[in-house]
Image (tube, one colour):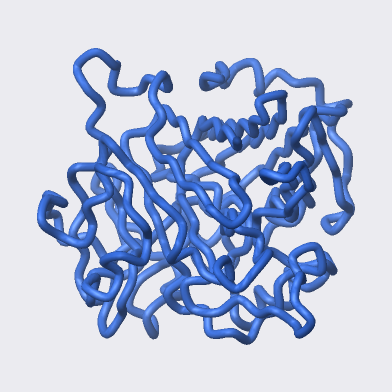
Length: 352
């Protein structure tokens, strides 16, 4: 799927919009795939696909009780499954300048040193409106009237579609209505393709990751703000241009995800070959697979960067969902127990 023309979204009849219970669950399905969302954060809460034995497995992290997302946002704030914005990732010193006008926004990260994911109450903590829903597709909208001090009004549409493949397609379209403003949205989904089915899949370290066109990555400082340098992955722990287990070099990835951090939390540049256009979605940009379930994820995106995070800071205090409890004792999300791949705007995920 490609980016849908923004005007088509803008002209959707207002009569289609539904004032939504922020915690009401909406499920869409197609052969081999079943996905559930809530309007709070336009958030993915469950994604079921079949494993190698034909059993459905829930491969994303979250909570059974939708109210737990609100409770979590007021405490740990894990960002399980929502859209983050108006600006995903970090803004140094919580300030930026557009057309000579400097804007200051809340600094909610690293003890007040920078802004993360749009500020104190970003798009992940907003109640989105259901614009359209059918058996296989769901569209949310959000009118940002200057949230967190960002300049201007922005309307955003998030459309999620499932299809046989099985495939989940996410399209994000943002339209600034009256002023120039920075916008960078992302789906913030945490994956465990092993679905915690056994002891080998309680972390993602045994999973295989391949990013064939990610030969460069964005260097960051010790509070995870880009330094402006693009580094090459060759001969570093960040080289996934050939398939390798996520855990193979992770112990060598020291301080590359922030001060005193071991693991991955890095943005990679997607250098497509000359035979592919800069915003083409003809090539898989990321493949991840689990031996435990036989489930493989492929990501196609029209964007030129993606970020991976290996749940370096999870510490075994959050239980996984009941759909992922397979052991006699309660399973918790431990360090490296998941991975997110932040992909922007229009993306397609193929799960095999």
